Image (tube, rainbow, N blue to C red):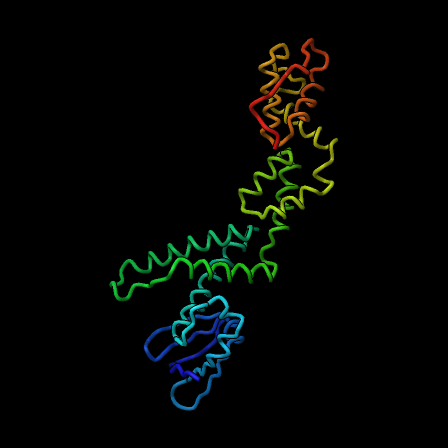
Length: 275
């Protein structure tokens, strides 16, 4: 057993506040405090935290604190930093949904900025030092818990965004896939969503392409020079950039200009590949 002398222990909201006899103060999430092998006893004017090191080494929390060497104060500091990151995460997900990897990235950056600001007026001996890998671990730990609690859900986020992009932006699957990939959504989730029949409805995809053409070239394509193969190729390329396959884009443009003298079968596209 290791004993850490404390001046005070009290709870507020979702945190436990711990003041040590050396003047250090920490805030720890209630759930972390309750799950740790701490036993608080009032056997003197000071509260004492009795820590069973062996239990900590076997605990769920400690698997993220791989270098625990019995330094209980350092362990409390680790959990206190987790609390700060947790509060930041709550603020970031309160008003909008966000993918897990993006949340980790945002938390890592914001806590790094917090440390930079906190250290500005501190002497070299008092600066807060935190290894990048430890910070990544803390951010990942918080996001794992948010995911388990349903605060963040990559599949829910991806499905909502994919439907929005198809219904309102008229994007094809290629553009939707590119967007979700940029948002750091795992490939298996993206592919699983796009395999849904909602995203493979050929009639709706064709209608979406018609809407994109109308938006750019007018209701009857009156802003498109139907006698110019280059203009026709540009119209096809526009649809490809919006996520549609080359042959589907070509067919959609052909449907609009089927009464012209242009033979669209001779239009070739060697530069742009299908998504």
